[in-house]
Image (cartoon, rainbow, N blue to C red; front, side, top):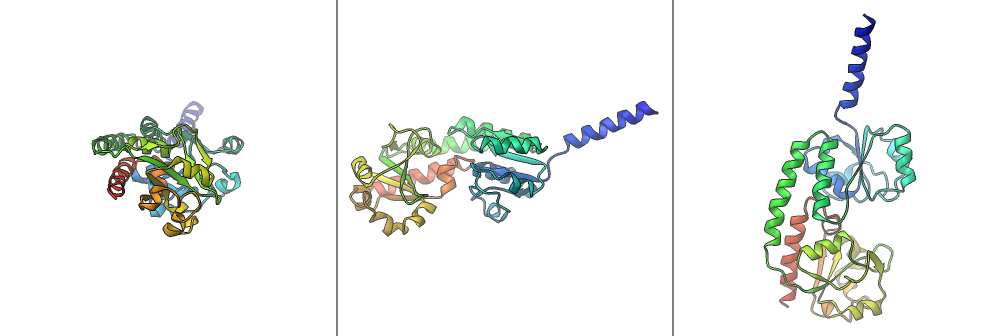
Amino acid sequence: MKKWLAVAAWMLVAGAQAAPPERVVTLGGSVTEIVYGLGQGGRLVGDDQSSLYPEAATKLPRVGYYRAVPVEGVLALNPDLVLASEQAGPPEALKRLGEVGVRLVSVPDAPSVDSLKARIRAVAGALDVAPAGEQMVRDVTRELAKAEAMPATRARALLLINRSGTPQGAGRGTAAAEVMHLAGLDNVLDGQQGYKPLSPEAIGALAPDLIIITRESLLASGGLEGFARLPGIAVTQAAAKQRIIVMDDLLILGMGPRLPQALIQLKREAAHVMAR
């Protein structure tokens, strides 16, 4: 009898451990987007400020920014799973979550197509919907092939973000730079690693054929007209010929499951503005 009770207790514990998570917090915009793409958005009880898509994600409780995770904010949502981009941090905060018993799964988040596919599979596996993950990978692979087959302009492009008042340019090793490369654009900051502030003189000297700016950065820069008049921007041929492309932040910076859409939009808009 005691042996049977012990076995039953073990089965209950094992079953509880294997139960699919129902209260999930995501840290990273593309991680959140993948959860929704897998049809599992109903499990989310919170996300971070980089989770801009789909619209439903913006209505969830926010736990701050995924690179500066507040432990108390996450714990307040009582999650049974935290899905975190490998870029999330600081490490001490993530360690603390694990120490208090929160299941935390770190998923790949490098700026590459292979990493995107690995991220999809990791998220799907953690949510116990691996077949849906494989289907998403197949869909992304198929649509990427179509997008990459489209003609490219090979224009010299500069991608800027503005979060602090000073424009920052995207160098190699960033998701934005990889998207530009996949779209057939030549990044004028290919010799730079990561994001770095650019002075007006530096922007003018780069002399890009076209400039890409994220929508939120454009708003912070006074809109399209205000941005085109900024020192450094105003002296470029890109501004003079109105070769400025505005992209959704997560679409161009997140390198998530909508990557094919990002490439198609960027290729089409680049071809359109370069015809001016």
